[in-house]
Image (tube, rainbow, N blue to C red; front, side, top):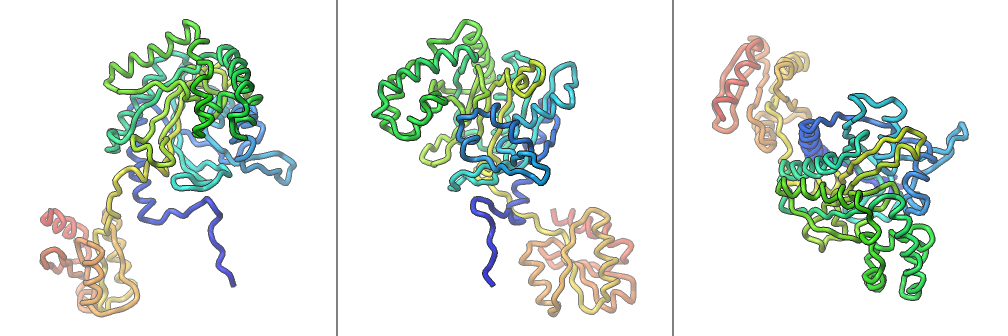
Length: 419
């Protein structure tokens, strides 16, 4: 029979991968907690209508990439393509706490049916954070500073560059969009098919094109900066002053628009300094003050970000897979006695790899050494008769015969002596 393989664009994470990912996730969770962010978990399936208007009906995510279906009850549902909208939905549905400001973080898989390539999968994992309920620029700056601290905790701070832009208010963007439409229609012959398709729907997305001929048209396009009012300018200027004061360097890029429609005012991305990689954006986010109202909630300003865990894990130096503390070697001891010994060690916090599959003592000890195990726990018929085990430290051959009741205590002491 033919082998059934994994779905295109989705991948397995093997034990050495999950150990590394867990270390990255633990570091991120600890960093977020220091800034007062608590974890939230939302369903992977939401009503399709939740995403269509909020993400933007003319975005690639809504038009091409969502995994949508009609369930047995006739509801139109979708696997979540991102987590900001579900998080805001959850906060609105369940009510805000903490005096109107909620700081939450999340992690988990997202789904988009786009073309798989290095660093981009159809099931991809994100870590993100949202602060909902306050419009103060302090929140924008805090999240950028928190991310800078996270990169430092991960040891990747020298590999990343911060890019910032000001998208203004919805009205300011509306005026700018009309000017962009006029400009791009005038130069339509120089645009590619993707850019032409965006003129009527979302001309801001044309600014993000990587096509060189399109970029020539973009370079002469009207600037959003010319539409920004005093309040918008002051908001983002305040953010920039705070992150500069925190010692964070950044560059301003007026073409940075993000891929979703709900953003306003501050937007930012952390990108790889090595821009030769095809996927250079590690993290992106910004302010979304009208999102709550779009899903039928009260006026709740918000700001947040999401980072690609797949890409971050690949960027962080991979720690070696942790070896078990003890390797249980059997030379005739009964299964029942071996189980008792192994569980005695495990109950005291030591990890145990129990040998199976037979083999003489030398072969079993060789395997224990190859796994970089600290101690061999040898159980034979003589040891079982005496209610004992033999502990052998593999780095120097030191060994002791001890009662089963003291095996965990003695094993821990032999480990300390090794260190």
